[in-house]
Image 1 (cartoon, rainbow, N blue to C red):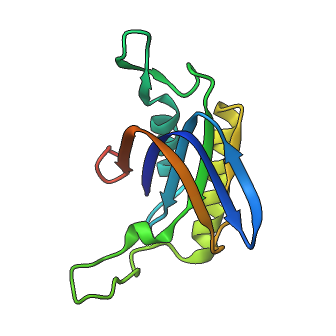
Image 2: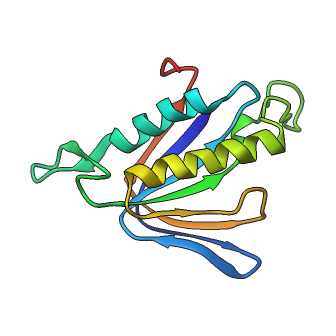
Length: 150
C-alpha cells in the first residue's frame, strides 16, 4: 500500500463537473493499493498517517499531527502509484490491486480514517477526477507499507 501525503492549505476533487469534496488546512492523501494488501496493512498505514507530526508548532518545528491542528483529510484513490516503469516507455500496472479488492480496501481505509479524524472528504473510486491543491511548504511524504514494516 502506498500513500502520497501532501500537507495542504486547501484541496478539492471534482469529477464530471461535480465537486466531490473540499478541505481547508490538512492532508491530501493519494492512495495506491497493491495486490497483496489487506485490512491489517491498512490499519497500520492509517495509524501512521493520522499520527504523523508534519504540522508546525509555535516554534516552527514539525511537531504537530492532524488532530492537534484540527486539520481535515482528503482521500483519493490512485492505482497509478503502482506504475512499473522499468521496461519500455509505457507503465505497467500489474502490481496494483484488482479493482474489486482495491475498492473494498479503499472504503475500509475511509471508514478507519473517519473514526480518527472529524472531517474526512473523498474522491470517487475509479472515477476520472481533477484534483486541485495548494501544497503547504511544499511538504510531501511517501508512505509505503513495504518500507514501514507492515
